[in-house]
Image (cartoon, rainbow, N blue to C red):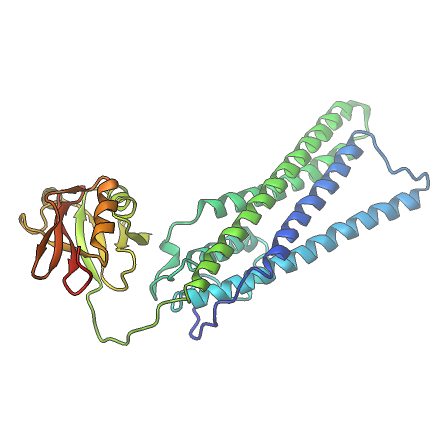
Length: 369
């Protein structure tokens, strides 16, 4: 795995985004045109020239155009990917990517390797482009892969397989000249045409999905760029980073804290032992976060919701008590009391979905209720 020690500033992807999108569209368009020509040829269409040499020249020109468009489009897409990856290093410094920089080019051409390396590179760029970045040392191989990238890559591979199958079946049908092989030749040609059409449809789908991937990664990096990249280091020797909280179900708990309380999902990683590491943090917080730990034993499950034996064990600070109090009530949070003022600030106690008691607190040093 590779990492960057001196990340460059996050540069805008917008100037080169159109080139990548046009590149993908051109690949799809030329693939459609060439495949349509093959289908027409199977249906009996031939070049209008009567001179065989002229027809051969026309076919050669089409092949040259097909190759040139793919080459130029590939260069444009790889250039976009180079900058996106450079930005990803700047957004998430200290996070090792799965493949070295040469694979951004070689990964598309080396047999077998080209079946998975380009997707892995895009997966890593996507994961490390989140505004705020990932923690240094995050293992990208354990992170969940975006469904959109999976869809793009599978349709891209499917289009290539369909084109190859169409070419093979067409060649088989052409070579069958004997009368007894006539029906087999027609069947092979028909299947070849069907495979060619499938290749066209998959190429169009892959092109549209690739455009979507470019747009999403560009949007993520533009948001990170607007936020100023990763948060600067405070150069502290230590601080309280995580507080564990026993939950019954990761998805249920993450949904409550992010959807109801408005927390940010910092990490959702599958572990080698079959477990899962889920970390959430209040919006705007820079350090302490909650590690949601799924109960693994009946004893732990019995403690879910009773972290401190009944008293409020967690306090959520706010700089605008009325705003957050009303927002949380509107989202369905149940408060046990009306807001009250104490010497240390305004406070109201509420319970989370497991019954843990929290205090919503605005310190007295901040603006009063």
